[in-house]
Length: 236
Image (tube, rainbow, N blue to C red):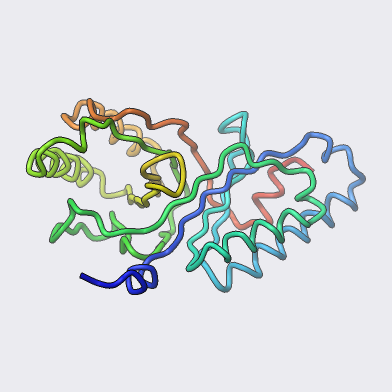
């Protein structure tokens, strides 16, 4: 059994921060808006050299969020420093975070020797692919799930894996929030095909494990783009 320090060093913190823009920002002079976006983007690009930091626009997808920053960091202090620096920018003064989720990477107890190239991350490291679309939601199982025999849980999860393998265009990224945040898991899917993801979710609704789902909302549909483009979708 590895010691605590080894476990900590081999994992990453995963942060999903959803931002919402105050409409008052759009009334600022053009030069002020441009300067604010440039300042914000410069901070994001600075930190992107030291951690996983990807940006997605949610404009037009939901009414309560405008864009997402997905982070993979080696420490909580890194996560906090990014937030602090972004809050201090001129644009940051007009942003709120209506949804924010913290998790960690961890090897799945159900995966073992199971592998499917391109559909799972490395589990211990955040490894984004190159897909255009990103689907994110928090996940909580019922108490009854955890009291089931291990072999029953493994059987139901193996059914999930078989369903997932029918849709090779969809890559899953699972992280764990137990004790760190309100959800138990954060589930994020990368794909170039929203249709494939929709069909996958519909099929999984009929799985045996579904009855042990307590909550899997809100669901966020996001479009990948560099931070400069994501900020341009804010309308200023």
